[in-house]
Amino acid sequence: MSSFTTWAQAAPTPRSSTTRPTAPRSSGRRCLSTMQVKDVRWNSKLGGLEMEMRLVNYFADQFNKQLGNGDDIRQSPKAMAKLKKQVKRTKEILSANTAAPISVESLYNDIDFRSTITREKFEELCADLWEQALTPIKDVLTHSGMKIGDIYAVELIGGATRVPKLQAKLQEFLGRSELDKHLDADEAIVLGASLHAANLSDGIKLNRKLGMIDGSTYGFVFEIDGPDYVKDESTDQVLVPRMKKMPIKLFRSIRHTKDFDVSLSYDKASELPPGVSSHKFAEYAISGLAETSEKYGSRNLSAPIKANLHFSLSRSGIISLDRAEAVIEITEWVEVPKKNVTLETNTTDETLSAESGTTDSTTDSKENSSSGSDADNTSTTNDETNVQDTITEKVLKKRTFRVPLKVTEKTAGPASTLSKELYSEAKSRLDVLNKKDAERRRTAELKNNLESYIYSIKHRYVGRLN
Figure 1 (tube, rainbow, N blue to C red):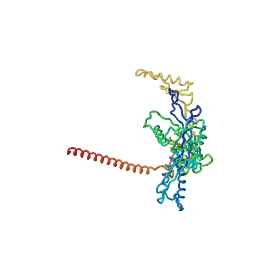
Figure 2: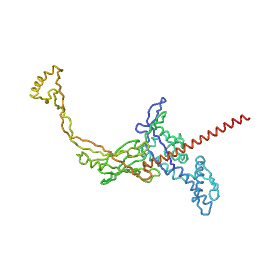
Figure 3: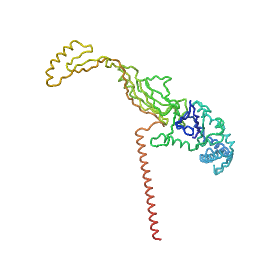
Figure 4: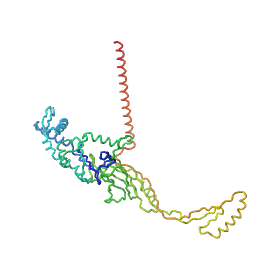
């Protein structure tokens, strides 16, 4: 279902702005190549389709009165499809004219339907929609901390923004004489998405990179559940607040000694995505923590064993649990060098002496010098070399061990990921379809070549006969 979308750019200010200048131009203007998304708000139930349904019900009531036999055209899907098709055209005409006709041949039981409607009547039928269209703008200003005076430009996106009454309401609320219409209301979203994708791609080179600081449209929370795990008010913890900069990597620490489950949910304070009915969207089972706790539990722990959960939020706003690990901190006696204290080792007499020295070292040196006089005739005299040996002492030190834990996804429902078997099956099915497509293209190419050859031979022989 379509929705009204407004894009607002704040005037650059030293304190808060949606764009950041990168290089000044010669004309005095600043070249803004980076923009920041301040906030995103929407109403998924409000859009051009809702306007069309107001007209459909209005004309359906008129046709039921024309029938006069108690039948309701709404019970005929075929008739309603015909009526909806013409109503869309009538709504578009009302955007440029003050009145528009509607004509449907053989609408129901071979009965034609013809009527007219004025723009004033159309605006009356959709009276409550105009105020609802202002709600997302009010929310954007409230949550982003911006004021109407900070808005520099307002671009309208979506076909329904062409309705004159909607534009008048926006101008009145924003205090503007006119709205900005520099973009194609129908194609801007597709072109913008393509440009953003090309900007993020490494295989496509743009003449100028466009920087975009985006934020998460939804807030995410995580919940822990497991044996002997004490739940309190802080159990349901905020993992990613709304409009958090993307992409980002983060982790959370859980003090527990047994295996547990982790579930990810949308923040209940924010609106759910269109079509989603449950806040919880992912579940994981963390195993291996109990075994690790049993293995290291007898050691001299300096802190309780904890599990670190590592999450990542992609540029697309998709959050996932990447890995988990157990963190064990123990205290052990470790031998370390003693400061400013060494031992000297004499390589010729193998006598150890402290830095202060002893009387025995002098006597031993004389004996070694006399016994080594004969060796001077055959080899060069070895100089006495003193090598310092370090004296060690035991000190209490902390050591940290990180043990990887097994993460098993057990998400059920539409959000569940493909298993390896299903992924292989899907890949094989796609390979078969790709081969059939390639064979069909090859067959068509050969048929075209054969047809071209037949025509060339035909023209050649016909020309000779003539």
